[in-house]
Image (tube, rainbow, N blue to C red):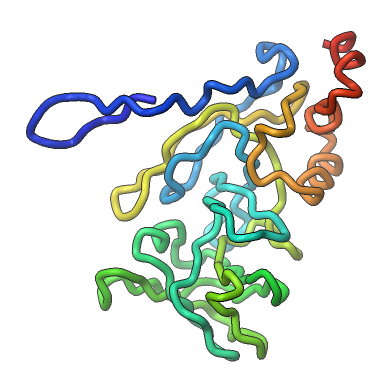
Amino acid sequence: MVETNYGDTPGLVRGAERDYKRLFFSRPEIALIIGVSLRAGYGVLKAGTILTLNGSGTNDYKYLPYCTTTFSGKENPGRAMLVSTTGAADNFVYVTLADSYKFRVTDDLIIADDTTPAEDLGAITEIDRTTWTHMAKITATTNIGGAAFTVARLANVYVQAAAATPWSAAVGILGSSVGCGVGSKARGANANMIVGNAALYKGLLHEYDADALADFTARRNLVSILSLMDKEVRRYATRCF
């Protein structure tokens, strides 16, 4: 992947190719793919990333990475990890300065860790990026419901993208890697999202889980993508595509 090298000397930084693995099992040209806008601040999203639609108060109709119901500490671009443990009744959290740009005032904020059930803290009312140089304070509307979310249990926050737990609903799959920017200079990106008529390799999907499959099945758009990936059905898939 070629990246711009900012500095006094003109040049390019040639890194490892991000999309060298084959995402499609079926013919890509027959897939139903639509153009979407991605929210700023989420860095480079890899091809195969499950996407969700912002469902919070900002209502900007932009897409962001889907957040799985359970997680084990591996990198998830949709989440912002907390830099300090919350109180049992706080309505604010602390995240890194760069991660704070994943959020906007009026976004609905979800908080979770690997033990405590996720909670909806309501709309963000303030994001303080000026008091500290290394972190930001995000203040929301609703207090935490009695149990602290701890750094030791991988406490994190993310933007609400569904009306009920786990507060994130899968709606499509990113067709190619794209950079959304990080921090204050992030501008978001235009991207292609796969929404149907395709069979993809399950191992190349990012943030895929049983809830994502249930979301796709309910929407009746990506059932074929997620049901034709195992070796046992490849012979059938070959006949279909």
